[in-house]
Length: 181
Image (cartoon, rainbow, N blue to C red; front, side, top):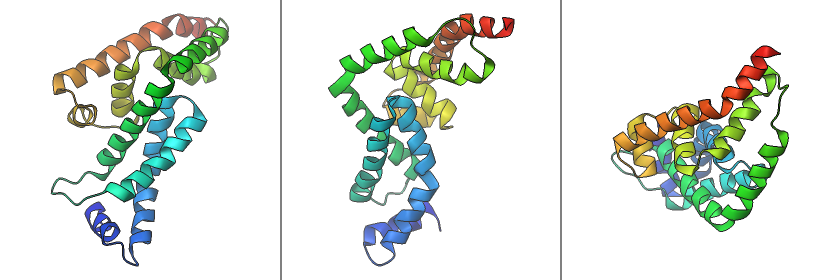
């Protein structure tokens, strides 16, 4: 069944609503979870938000002509992540800085490069991190990134470009060190 057909069944709230919702969950849970994990950086908070996203989706989904279920789910996740970050921004930044500053150093091996990328993502700022994650991890087009983040197409492209540039700058010393070892 298409996403549109599944959403119609969910909205109907009949006997077939639960299996339709389970199918939507099965199709998109991995992407929404990955988005929440990357944006939040704290597994427990990301998991809470991830679960809340699907509850909110079930409660608020509407049939529209240009229905994009994945985009709608990511928009819900984005708003929930932003709200959670607003509440606890100060303490999370301090914790992230301490953890990153205390663990980075010479001697990293190639298998630890992903941890370094995650650390660099935490340091580049929310707008750039979000655009980068949507584009590079979730595979959204620049137009979709612009729509989800409520910015212009040019701004979405610029954010992704600046994020890549800053991540490369932050990783340069560690990549050099990895190559030496």
